[in-house]
Length: 165
Picture (cartoon, rainbow, N blue to C red):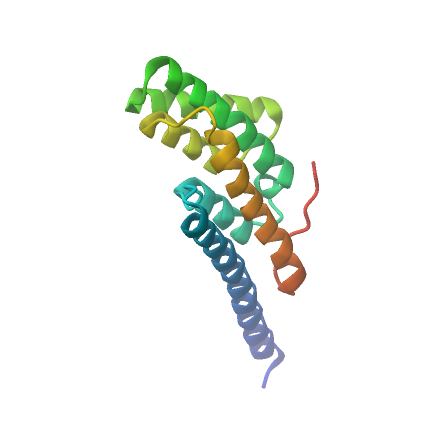
């Protein structure tokens, strides 16, 4: 067997291992979100939080996967969206305003995390109680970050090395 063939097989094998590790991380995070929702009734199994888990699974070393980016983005976006929605009511226009305001806030904070803008749009579209950032967003984000940190310890090829900045 030639060395080029061996490198090709090794490269494919490594790609499979990395892909399956990322899929395992996402499976764990999504399952924890689903179980938490089933047991508590909290709406934590929502698209923005599953999308955050997918970002952390597929791009664990990217700036948008940093814990600071995830935490600061949701901590700013959800209250902004709740405030806008409380002022004008839920609608597609409110969702648009919430998403745009969230992107501006994330960039000013240096904490970009696109799924948080989806969360803001969701709040603007559907409406949410003033407690939504605490009783839904905080547990969901904690579960996603916890799953990523745990996966980094358990899955040898899942390379999530969190840094604050």
